[in-house]
Length: 325
Ligand code: VTB
Image 1 (cartoon, rainbow, N blue to C red):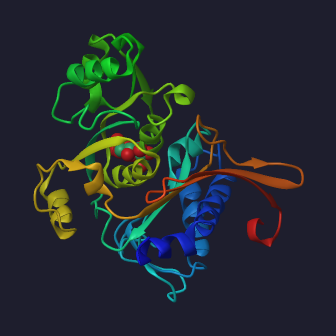
Image 2 (cartoon, rainbow, N blue to C red):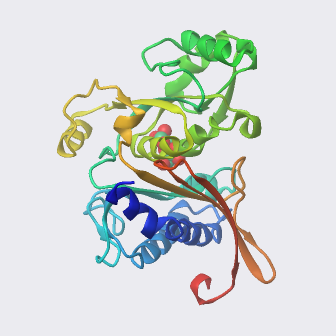
């Protein structure tokens, strides 16, 4: 094991769960209140507090926005006590603000930490994505193949008919043609209103989630977070940035993007030793939402690490102590 791998392991395996747990509890208190902004802010504040208690020299590379537009956890913000290892951090304290405001499934508090310089510094633009779970031949699906080709290849590899395949797609007008093409093959479409980090992760466990493949255009930052998870849990993913105006392209260039046509592989989205954690805010198919019991708060978290492939499911019971008051 190299020193860098030791560093992530030693400092963070247990600690990272607390960061998403705390953000999830704060956001969960605002579930179903119809107020996206308040829920997001609560998650951001809570995540930042916990991150700043970690013995790391962390830098946010994917965060809530640029310094001048995001009051906290902005891109470039330094987090941690500053007396530990240097790590890059990608975070989404509340992935699914609308899901939380409406108390709908699969809102998550999410974070990924990696060796410095190994996460794609994705600008806040769209990304075209395709993802499947682990255990398939490399290159089985491809962003440049047609939906028909991808779905047929996946069905064949699974030994099922294409009618037994379900594709998860964000319910957006931009996906009308894609949805039509997928349904045209006989496959099913699971439409989600938000939350494509969860959508991608769901492909790694079709038995529990009913989702075999993720397709379509979502946020680029969410693409890197999802890639970090797939690097750990296993799976395939490709992404390509989608920009629609000069301002977006300028932002992308500022963050180091040179080729807008580039198709990023999973390992280019997240290349180094990476650790990923997510805590359920609302109930979902892989994680339960936060529960507020009589004497305890219960959280459900998954923590994963790429270099070892360890996936830890952590059901935690917290007392109503000062920390969560
Ligand atoms: C997705 C989804 C997010 O943004 O990335 C989506 O995962 C993409 O943007 O939960 P549009 O909403 O503009 O389609 C979210 O819905 C919100 O960040």
